[in-house]
Image 1: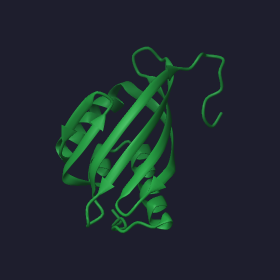
Image 2: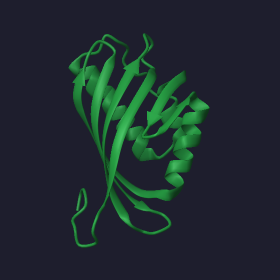
Image 3: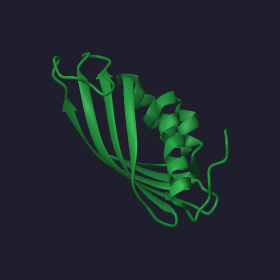
Image 4: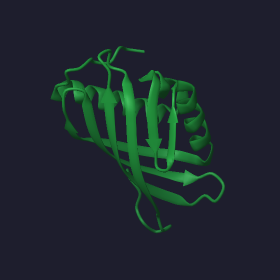
Length: 138
């Protein structure tokens, strides 16, 4: 895996990190996502709070077991020296019910001096998509 930029961040390096995160998420490979994080990284995802690469991988394996057919877009909102704020929109199909959902999220990321994510704080809303409503990319 290519090494990510290290702080202090610029617009270009913030966008590079954002794209790497989006690509890792689209690949649906929990190990790839976890490698973008420091070994003791703290994640908050909705009501869940956990720490460490192994916990991140477990969370993503569990999440992607019932969220299938992901379509995702991440947008840079702001950045500073070692932080990035992102707007995240994702559409996915529930593996058990086949119902489509659109998730709207705000994420705040913090990075260490080596460029690894040390904290991810995410809030999201999931909205069912009616059958006759267009989805992302359609």
